[in-house]
Length: 283
Figure 1: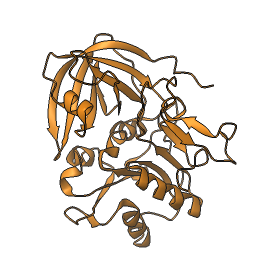
Figure 2: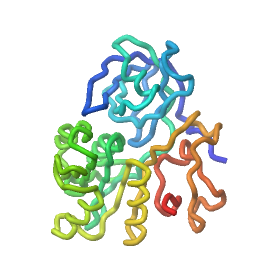
Figure 3: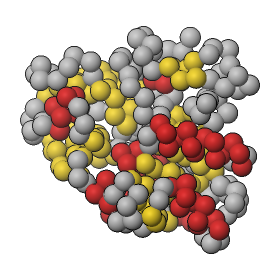
């Protein structure tokens, strides 16, 4: 059975800033007591306040950015746990456990097949560092050019396109889609992708990375499989422990895929990033 990653550990950290982001989000920056090496994009940490103001079960969040020894997390304020984290003040203490799970594959240039990142709402969190790392080069492979990457960011409305200006400043092609048409294409990211392909701004053959709500990921999975596109999904599953003990984050595996020996994979240790050849979200 899969085990927690060997580089994961738990330590206390100090909140340094909590900045509002979008209509209902915050960017939480923390300084761990023990610095972490550079973290691969789309890996995650379990976060919990130490003062008893949130449930004992920690909450999982993708690493958003790293600034030296400090870690940043993009948090959508939804329930008791995220509200407690958003209410942190500079100097407050919390516990961080990570880095957990696996991240995006190495984003090396592929001739005539750009990497297209599909983000839905708070699902943009694992893409900022993903873009940074792709432009810098990963795992000893050549760096991507800005033209090798594209970000398609969708949300219900403009105010839920979290930190969109910071993404645009990364220098890669960036398009937005909103359900109400308040920013960019009116519709969802798959509709936007098809529109860009029809206009020739993106080719028919692309390599997809997606993170967002489950229904969005199911649609992306169907889209990729129907067109024979390489595709990786970063899941936003609920988790209890983050290290494979509680079995609270099962993901159905594909019967003809590399994980078929078990009917379910553990999102926390075998994910959160899976290839569409490994799992079967859409039924």
